[in-house]
Length: 252
Image (tube, one colour):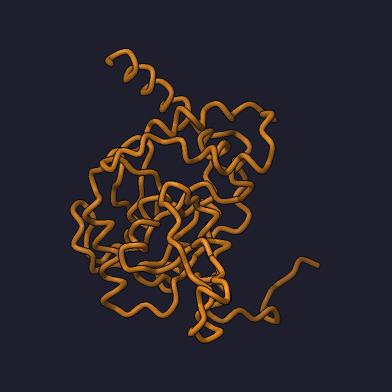
C-alpha cells in the first residue's frame, strides 16, 4: 500500500509539471470575466500540464479542466467574499476553492446552464462546496498516464471509454465528474442518453413526449461535454461587454 502511494505521488509530481510549448491565444482578463460570469457557470480551461495533454488527447478537445464558478458571496474559507471564486478538483489537493485569478494566463471558455432559478444555482454551488476536501481519483491518473506518449495507438472510438476506468470511489472526484453530479442533483441535463419510444410504448403520448432522457453515469463526463452540450450557452466575455471592431487600432 505504502509503495503504491509513493509511486502515485511521484507520478502526480510528474504529471503536474508544465509543458514548455503552451501558448495562451485568447486570454480574458479576470476582472472582465468576473463581470460576465454567473453563479454555477462552468469555466473550461486549456491546461498546460502533462496531465492536460493526456486529457486533451483522449477527449479530442482543447479543454482539459473544468471548474464551477461560485460567485463572490460564497462564504468559502481562505477566500474573501469579495474575491470571485471557483471550485475545482485539483490533481494534488482534491476538491478545493481557488480564486478566479488562478487562470488569468490561460485560454478559457464560459459554459452557462440556462433557465436555472436562483435557488437552483445555489443548490449546484452548495453541492460543490460540500464536496471540498474530497480527494482526486488517482486511479484515473494512472490510467491517463499511459496515454502521454506522442501518438498512442488508441482508436478514436475507444478513447472516451478509457476515461471511465477510475476507482468509482464516492469519496473521490475528478474535475468534470463532480460538476456533472452537481447538475444531476437538480436534474439538469448535460449530455443525456436520448431514447426514442416506440408507437406501442407511447400510444397515448403527444409527439413531443416520445423522446426520453436517460441520465448518463457521472464518471463518463469530460470537460468537453459542457462545451458541446446543447443545454449550455457559450458566453464570450469580450462580446458580452459590447465588442465593436470599428474601435480596434490595427498596426499599419
